[in-house]
Length: 162
Image (cartoon, rainbow, N blue to C red):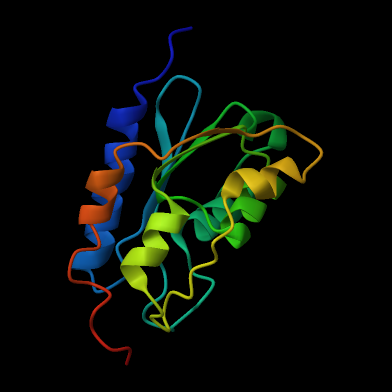
């Protein structure tokens, strides 16, 4: 089976992130893709309207996916994320059973962009470190198309929190 077009599929997650931002949310998006390259689910960041600090696109997507698919199915799926999954989101991907993660913007780079913004207290903890602590392998590809990922955040984090 040929390798999926990671760049095209990651750009799909970027499109979800743009939709999130256009809808008044933080510019993060994630998609779940099966082994044949079909998008199974999409998820925008879910911080607003309830100010859910755990409403990261990847975490919400993994909660939905773990309810909809068996771990044996998720092992053959890829999580595409506009930014590197934080420790919480990497944990959610691990527990849901996803076999591969492809991300755009690195957590370290995101931290330089957001600074000390109270709505995104970025952890400088690579998802590879989180996955390495687990009992099963998760393939990680990224950062990929990082400049495009960074561009999603232009002008977003300089404003003050509500």
